[in-house]
Length: 488
Image (tube, rainbow, N blue to C red; front, top):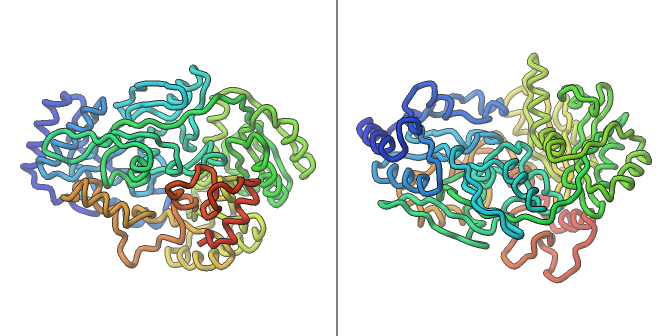
């Protein structure tokens, strides 16, 4: 466990100032509260679990608006106390742990929805994604994307997330989703830096190491009439083939997920989820439902249920990305499982070889922006065995991102340059930027997604495809990405 090196007198002085600023109820030094604020979903990784506990906060603060967030960051700066920002802590594997002690700044009480405009929504960083989706729906719109845990905060999603429901069309959350941010910076006086466009993207997926997102403006689009579809398949290969076909529907699905029989058996009981077959779930535009049903039937599948409404779509979302692995682990307590984030058409085209990389391997699959991504799970036999599989997967043409580490994992040089300007004392989420030489990261960014979209590249235009060239069918995009070396 990393021990706090913060001087007790600095913590005490900060505590007193924060009580004056926020009130007694919004600051705590209670041991149990500090322990709860010092954990995230790191237990999803058996490799990280073996290293826990990794840190313990000295204080926890809950500012209730963007200005208070800036004031808390400033106070921590003046007292020289490290600060780890936090939303709900969902989906983070160590990134939300205060490894140097100090202050945990919990943004979840700063949840105001400031404005719903035409094509955008502005909220404070603690607003939940489901609240934003509901507010957008009241205005006849929808958010571009939200993570698999729709109860996550927008600040947490932008700081530590990557994609989710809506990513088939819009890619990762650093690919144009954000239009503006107000970022709290460590300074003598409370400072909110307003950034827009490309400058705003540089703060996305940086784990709060260069600034604390206090307020965000993200894109909306006209609301669509969505249907949540559940289907079963006797085998995984036809389910994968149909997932690939559904990616190409027009309008595109908001989400398509598929699981092997073994993973499906561990999902929560539901009439739409088979107990002895493979599961496919999708959020589809109502106008494509008939075509999707035909594709499923032609692939040997059976539609088990179709449901309407935002809450039903959220339920399907809660069975995507790493959630099926959570259920696999929870409902198989006698086995310790690990998973690796993977991506590429090889997940479909070479599935038997992919499964064979790890004994007992099983894949959760997602249709994504340029090519499928997924979570490859298997029984855990040791960290070295996990790492030994990475080059084998890469040889198959599979992108690999390791969830068994907590370091900022892309645009490192840009983030280091940014942090040198915004946090020269290194107080913001220390220990998460600059992986040591022996850290095993894989060969891809979060969720095995593509890297950031270059400046000037239209959102949705495949990286490496000349600007102005028509965007083809999503499978053509994936093929081009693979041929141009984006699998590495």
